[in-house]
Image (cartoon, rainbow over all chains, first blue to last red; front, side):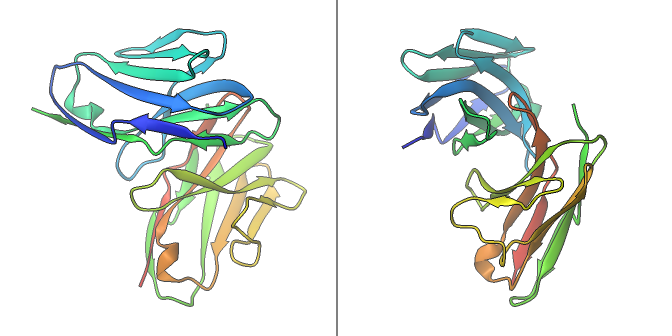
Length: 113
Length: 112
């Protein structure tokens, strides 16, 4: 069964600290993996997208890594800011033309001053 | 990228009634998607709406409950019919390609 699991479920950190969110997937065949940020009351916004041949991709203070062999990804946030408080969703695209995505349940991050 | 707007942004409805949610995109797109996000959960695909053809529904979702219209390449509607409290969710539309999807801000629906 195609699944995407994220950990931790929630996380609280102090402003300025770094953190790493984890994503494990069992989607096969695999095409790409995305990380989205969803602010409360908003739709998800894409942070990074990686194909199976990419190991890392950065977007400002956000760096995503991908190990297609172990089917694991991580999202590292550097020097956190209060505005980073949101849900971070790992999404995997299968290798077909249906555009169907498999969503993780997300990690809720709270950055405190 | 695409800019997506949804109406209404939120609504409180009585059980047994229906609500139609509108999704407007600032550019022509082939595929539009409707998702549901129940409280504390991630997104679940309801259906894919292509212009000029019937919407394709995912397992667990039926046309009688969630009829969809796609009259042109920039607009779609999703109706939540005969609502019950279990339909209380955020409903989001999305557009995109195989490698990127853009989401609307969502419609927060509460059924009492």
